[in-house]
Image 1 (spheres, one colour):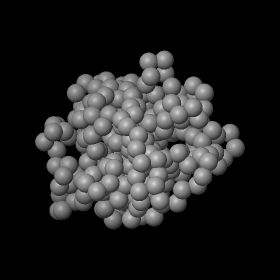
Image 2 (image 1 turned 60 degrees about the vertical axis):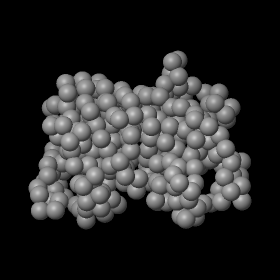
Image 3 (image 1 turned 45 degrees about the horizontal axis):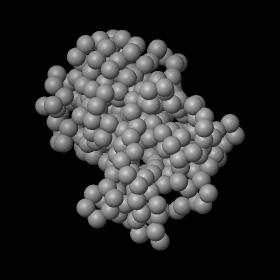
Image 4 (image 1 turned 45 degrees about the vertical axis):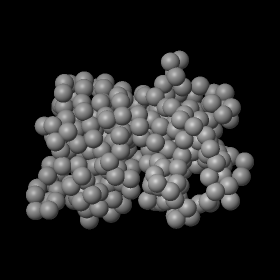
Length: 276
């Protein structure tokens, strides 16, 4: 079976996008892994399916699969690419697009300069809803990893995140700690692992080890989670520039009960066809 696809990226976090608005597409885990394979497939961090709306009041539905073939709830950089894709392909003429996901409805807005702003929804802090094994909500938690006690913030941006504050993100033990925290038994659905270096009250550097994908050049939900965690710790102001290896994102969070808004680019790289 041959499938047309579009390769896109948001700050180097890259995606293979399929339009399934007219015909449903059911991909098996081995097929998803093959598509994502950087040697034998197209190569990507995530695969995105553009579907017709499932819910009233939405324009589209959005499904996300990690490179390991597992379906996940949310992806911020992917959401920007999704919005850019449906506009560029003529699937909608709207500036503001409501999209259903496994995590609920997100709202994307195409800005005049071509960047995309995503309303990522309200962060979730209750452990059972992250999900995270803890008796009660707390500003930070102690997490034992390989005999070492780490201080983390735990929250959900539609998907689970564990955020550490580090002195130097470039020297952080991402490759070693990341896999151990990702699969830590206190996170029953695994977790995305963020390493945040605070440069100023409006600027951070960030690296993220993503659940099911490994370290990526950028992570939109990870940037949102890091800024929320930093604001809650009293380290950051409401609007923060997040520097990743792939480029910069602008994150705005006005505090408890408010949605997080993320602004950044989305780029089409090429179109092609793959026989799966």
